[in-house]
Amino acid sequence: MSQDAFRLISPDGTESELPVHKGTTGPDVIDISRLYREQGVFTYDPGFMATGSCSSDITYIDGEEGVLMYRGYPVEQLAKHSSFIEVSYLLLHGDLPTAEQLEEFDQTIRRHTMLNEGMLKFFNGFRYDAHPMAILSAVVGSMSAYYHDSLDSSNPEERDIFAHRILAKLPTVAAAAYKLNIGQPFMYPQNDLNYTENLLHMLFAVPAEPYEMDEIAAEALDLLFILHADHEQNCSTSTVRMAGSSGANPYSAIAAGISALWGPAHGGANEAVLEMLQEIGHPKHIGKFVDKAKDRDDPFRLMGFGHRVYKNFDPRATIIREMAHKVLARLGRQDTPLFDLALELEQVALKDEYFIEKNLYPNVDFYSGIIYRALNIPTSMFTVMFALGRSVGWTAHWREMIADPTGRISRPRQLYTGPTQRDYVAVADR
Image (cartoon, rainbow, N blue to C red; front, side, top):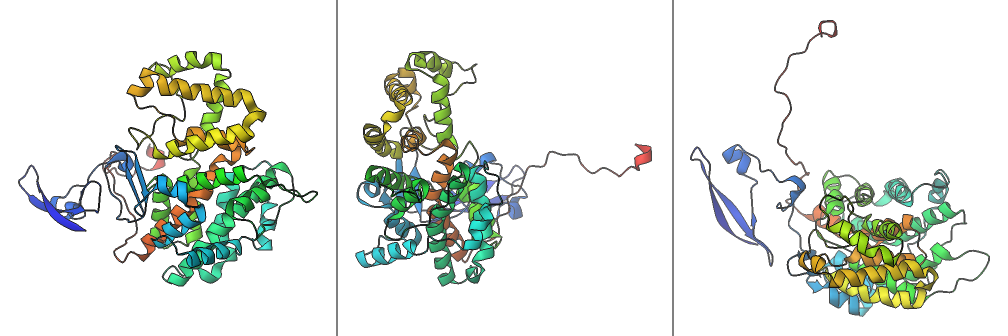
């Protein structure tokens, strides 16, 4: 990381030379860590839209050009040639595995999918209708009570054990939350199934009859998990890093990330897409709702279009669009009106001059919600599925943060706008 200097002169003439760090690609970063000491001021950046909170070599995004790379590999290549387990190894270890390394990693994950039996009893303490994200966050947070033998974050071997456990066990937790909601018995994982096949089995199998695996469904989930595996310093990832910077155990840090992801502005967007489609109701109403979306005075918004980071197109949406059409052709006919509505809205958005001018293209949330619906995954589980894919990105960032010798506890500052000093007045005199 090479550096130049940025000269800053304050109104009173005080000069500072702030280092400018250059990454391997992307914008340069001005190091302001000495700014308060030398100039007596903080910077102000609500939402941290222009602030680099850390250095990282995991994921790179160029929103202007529509670029997303994991460890330097374009997501398009990984989506076409790789698997979620291989991408997980890449994110965790920095390089693509050899065939032997991939086989060993895959077998390790398969053999750590079972939960401690005490954890399964924990599920019975939740209401039958508890939201699966509430269960997921609570159960992951409790895992430190069951797996406290390997919580030494300074030990690289124990960091590996944690990474394998959270990746392997999270689908089992998610499936158990779903089974609790629908009143069916929990299904134990099966080591002969791959990652997404095992998840589908735990979600939809019942003890009374054999479960017939649909390979299209497993393929679609694997692709979605690849596309959701990481997305740089987003809200939930930054939350994991911030929680972990205190030295909190990694399960607590991941639970914090799950809670952040649950917010409708972050992980709940694909749920909002389905709610929007249900509100539109019929293709004949699309024109009216498009007009409402164009009206600045109307609060209605078309969900699943455009992106805060990607300004021209979301590279993940281009990939997932093909899979969405493949899934609908094979599995989606049981909900024909809703899917026909989604496809009609997609075509309107791709051709309408307003959408083209504003770069309001269908994004990954638009298509992922449609796929989940076609796979009979209920809306309440959409964000849970997002969390399963993103868990490996959270873990990779936690590991990177913990291993950074320059790391410090996160402690943002503020612009204080409250009262200046006031003297206490006894209650009788107020």
